[in-house]
Length: 359
Image 1 (cartoon, one colour):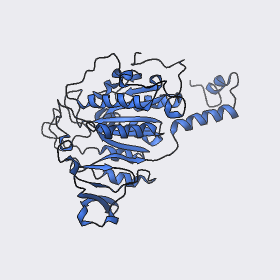
Image 2 (cartoon, one colour; image 1 turned 60 degrees about the vertical axis):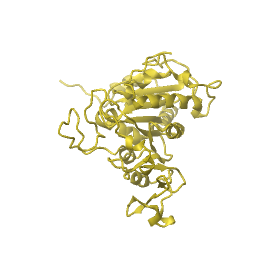
Image 3 (cartoon, one colour; image 1 turned 120 degrees about the vertical axis):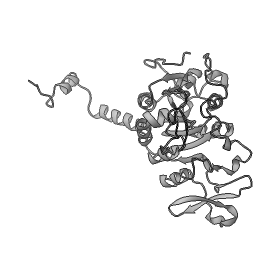
Image 4 (cartoon, one colour; image 1 turned 90 degrees about the horizontal axis):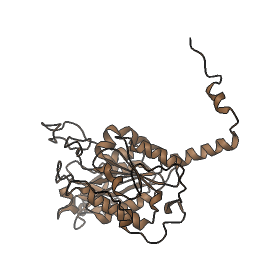
């Protein structure tokens, strides 16, 4: 099945397993979601790991291929739809969430995914991203963050750290970077999470929860660009990585470090990291991913720092609220029931009392 820009008009597809209808017949494997396209990323790119994880995850989830739609923008990550044997669109720079919104509204039988990068999503596409999140459209957004522009050969991005020397900032970047999770939670994302490309188990766990969530699921995936920003997340992969990674698990105290030597505690209106031995056990924050107030998850996101001294990963927030696409369909159905379309009504609308002749 050709995956890029397949037409969905007039097709009769069964619903995906996530909406409570029959899943794909028989067991599936990662190869069932592998297209015949040659994968063209640089050797060592973190995108390879993410692609392999997604293929395996989709097979385990039991989704039908014909009920999957992957929409991407522009960038290295946006080649993703070519490499999956499912429906997909390699679309316009920064506009993938807008296109995905139209699909989610008009095709409730599809599981809609957006694949984007830190430049595509947070620069030219920043407006589309925050509005998809606030509307809570039923889609899953995967943001690959390598803190650099890779496809255009190494310019600084909206997530590059201050002082970053690149082709476009030869004296070092003076921009203040986005905290990606803070942006998502500031837009009141109903699901927000972060994962590391090399952490296959953690990434799979986050993706599964994101796919099962009804509404906009936002997942930031930290990944390496070996050509233009090599080793940007190496501190999170070394032997002492556990002293940097704050693993969030719902219902468990937020304690981290190889021996649990650090803990997250309340600090005024926010949160802070403290040595576990210096705080009372009752003062340690117990993670609540289902907290209705977005301020808590936002405070967690502020624990992260550009020097990667502390990086929370896992599910920050997972709450339920009405979705935009469900609301649009309900509104349209109500309009059809109470105001049947009459012959000639479109023409009367176009030339009704709110029109006039000029000249």
